[in-house]
Length: 111
Length: 114
Image 1: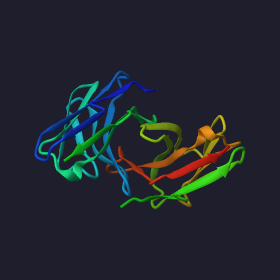
Image 2 (image 1 turned 45 degrees about the horizontal axis):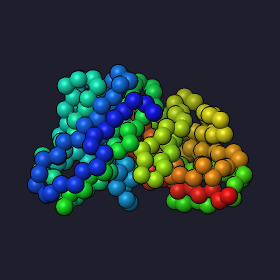
Image 3 (image 1 turned 30 degrees about the horizontal axis):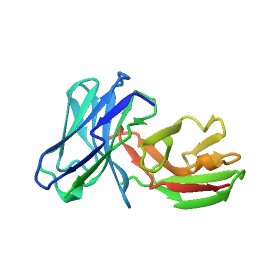
Image 4 (image 1 turned 180 degrees about the horizontal axis):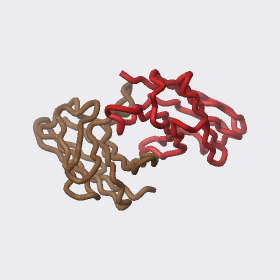
């Protein structure tokens, strides 16, 4: 695998609580991405980063924020979790003209 | 909005058969196209990346082709095996604004019957 670790792998939490998911890479790739995968919708981009402290919104960014203070770490935060954010979250990494490689995912349930 | 479509949604074939998975996209101004496989409960595994200037890529029993003018890509799997059973996803990276984003199809679920 491409040296991507997502934590936690599973989480159950309650509506209204803050949640932070972490993606850690050992490949020194420039680009990092957060996707969510839902039945009937497929994979959709939430946010991405093109360098330390450089981030931008994806297709479904409402309710999410990200931070990248180091090349190797990309954090996804749900400030106040809602049931509609129950999903499987994937982190991916890439370099220019290289394929995206994905982590094993975090299964998040919000009750 | 860019759309990526994969047909069929599911496919079942006997072991040893050659097969083709289809992917179509609405805008020909693509930067590259990538094929993935996803096993149940797992992440995505990159199979092949085709740059917009290329017509095809090969890896082992897999061959992916790209026809930008018609907005189509195919993934050819030769001599299918039960271990090929998985969901296959096509994703397009478009040129221009938001060009870092991959737009995914919903996938084709392949079952190879022993």
